[in-house]
Length: 129
RNA sequence: AAUGCAAGCUGGCUUAUCGCCCCGAGUUGUCGGGGAGGAAAGUCCGGGCAACAUAGAGCAUCGUACUUCCUAACAGGAAGGUACCCUGACUUGUUGGGGUAACAGAAAGUGCCACAGAAAAUAAACUACCUCAGCCCGACUUGUCGCGCAGAGGGAAAGGUGAAAAGGCGGGGUAAGAGCCCACCGCUCUGAUGGUGACAUUGGAGGCACGGAAAACCUUACGAGUUGAAAGGCCAAAUAGGUCACGUUCAUGAAAGUGAUUAGCGGCUCGCUAAUAGUUUUUAACUGGCGUGAUUGGGUAGGCUGCUCGAUCCUUUGGGUGACUGAAGGACUAGAUAAAUGAUAAGCACUCUGACGGUUCCGUCAGAGAACAGAACCCGGCUUAUAGGCUUGCAUUUAAU
RNA sequence: UGCCCGAUGGUGUAACUGGCAACACGCUUGAUUUUGAUUCAAGAAAGUCCAGGUUCGAGCCCUGGUCGGGCAA
Image (cartoon, rainbow, N blue to C red):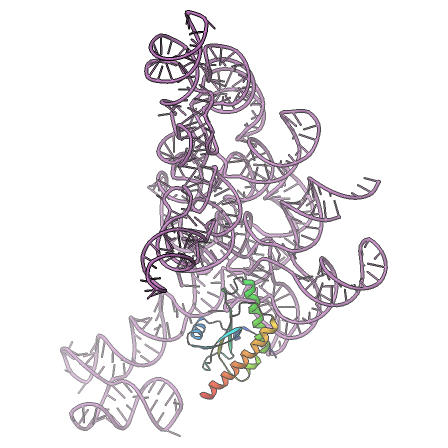
């Protein structure tokens, strides 16, 4: 039933929301990622929206950047069920901070930890409200 | 056969599972088709396309520079010329092969050429050389020779330098010399022949005047309007603006307010907001404010378009030495936009290493490797980066005949 | 996507029109001082981002590349 899809509505593409995310969102670091997030249940989006970024300062060649982004995207696609259950919404940006190209298995494991942390944060914020 | 150099071509394939982007069916289960490169890169040139500007001419600025051709155009390419370099052959100065060239003008003008050197660009001064007559000294053959000094003249041959030294080399000539004269080479001017042309071959004359550097300024000839898809076009929330329509009432009170009514909004037995000021012709009209609704131009967020059928590609064939081009037939071949074209697993093929069998080249097993690199409006080039493989040419080495 | 600058000792800057790469701070050594600072004297440290070319000769001129910075939404 499309469990592993990664369509356009799950990506962050609006310039305004990205600006808002980086201006007002909070963040944590978990090697090799820096995650910027913002939980806003009033948004019109029906699913969590995600942005993946690799700095051209660390990887000057476009081929390397594309490879890393594809691996992260694939890892997120396979594991996004962790934060998808229920009707949670939010904007997340995964910034790749490592300076070496990690293999797919390692990225997958690290992203599993990251998503677990996001899930906890999610619950905490709802409890506080 | 190996190695090296140059040129050209190629730049892994298959299956399974889970996905991404576009198109077409279908209908909301899906199904079918397509999905990176030779450089997509650097952004170095040239065009298309688009908007704006624009009488014509000149100047300035920038670029190009042997010739002819190709082309939409070019700083690109093809063919050729000239100069230089490498290499082979022999007839030893000719020829075969390959390579390089920002290859117009230094006799239009201005400026530069450090150090060294006599002198660095109108060729003049200096040293040295030669002749003449004079003085001093020395020798002897006693009027000659040699050295030195100053004078008059000849002349530009010699002068350790330097990147570069004022036509080269040989002969004649002379007191000594000098294109002073001669032959050859080179240079300048001029004619003939061949070639579309660069230029080549050759005849005559001149008699050295003309160093390098234009990648110093510059001159000549030719060319160039500016800005780039974030161009340009279309649609268009929200907010503020313009125009029009409707509403803006009543009671009480000194006032704040309270109540009713009307209009609008919301979470709709209720709550919130508004019901105002001025002028006059004063039971009404006009102007402004406020509220609501309609409409309107520009246009923000955002979206659509531009966007992929084009100087296109493939095959056959005609023309041309070639770059290229004519004709016929066929094909549709990525269009993303915080930016798709992927991830994982297995196998095959390729290369290397190790082991074993066999034996000089194969087989099996294990491990490792597989380049440079990612479209962003589209083309033609150039430049730069490229593991491995293939083809052709040249050179060298080894082996066999 | 388009455009424009720059690169020189450890650091910050010079080098005119092509002719021995200079200055300051810093560093090292010595002297002065009881010791340190100051001061004085001496010294080391680049061959000019890389590769070609023009030229007798290149930091400078030309071509290609690498890296860094900036501008336009």
